[in-house]
Image (cartoon, rainbow, N blue to C red; front, side, top):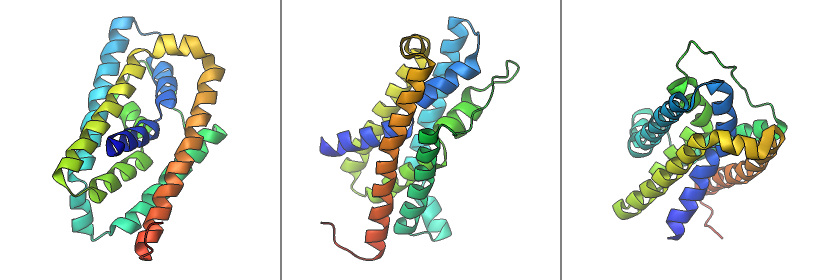
Length: 200
């Protein structure tokens, strides 16, 4: 249960639910409810496919390129930290709505919601967990996190009305603060593993 909750919490926050809502509302514009829900469904499926592909098959990248887990932990943690800094400072890149384009998969699912920091973090998770039973528990946690993000997307309009633009920005900054702690932990773990320092 501890593994499940830990990974669920980590993945849920790196998927940046309130940033996802802001971007979804921005890109969906004045779409009717049916079209907006269809876009939310396609985005959710894309997020799930990307996350599971990276989680289950990302280790092939390590083997082919000869990248060590500690090195990738430091790199992924750094990217996630920069993403978090952008959220806290309010400078994370945004894309204006284009009614003639299909935004559900690109750019919303990737790289907005599943960005480099998210991909790197999930890659590290896939490499760190070796036992099959633990790997399946972690996969279930990732699935639940993605389903929660999907729920946020389907409820984006009422959540946006409830919180307002200022409320969404405040929650994004709070999420960014939590992400900085997660990123720092990933970096520290990578450095500690590289230097063969036993966990305290």
